[in-house]
Image 1 (cartoon, helix red, strand yellow):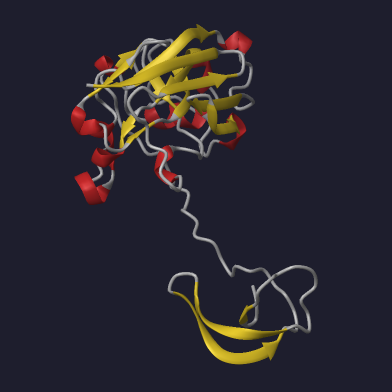
Image 2 (cartoon, rainbow, N blue to C red):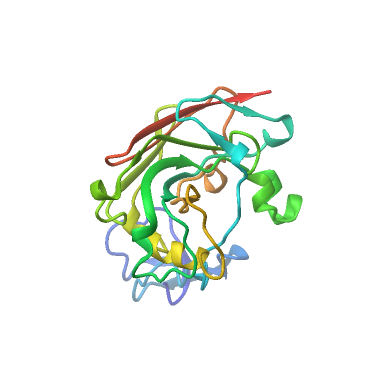
Length: 247
């Protein structure tokens, strides 16, 4: 950061020795000119800090009912009350192959039937605390809000689920592109956590979280509109492609 805040017309090159106006304020509260001039002695990072979310000790968990499932190429019908802040979340999806309870992280992947591609469709207006009390489950549980597919890929073809590439496109434009090695909690950690004192039935699907690039955090916002097509693809698993259809 600067040891003092300055204003100048064209910040290019080495500015040491330049005479500029000193500013008062900060990022949170804004800046204002003081009318006082001074010389730059040294340039530091232009930001003293950036806001970071703390990594929680456990994954955030919510459920989706079976009727949220949709096919890999189905249209997703959107209720009028879920249209204002409709969003996408491309996610690697795990399918449990046998009943699991109190599974250790070391043995967790042996309970996996296979992997597939998913989209955790979300009505943010019901999810955000300021608009609807933070109802994650309700916001993500409308019929058709969990399209998955196009197949279930055997673990023998996915020796390491943390070494895959995921991409989400909206109307052909890339919104999300990342590697599963960037997940905060690995697949094994997620299974171990969810099976703690709880039986995961065979056939249970687990959507493992989404990377940056969702519409909620874009400026301007990138919420889905009627007719938008969302495509999610993962290396070796294929692609799902779903059109949002407003009722």
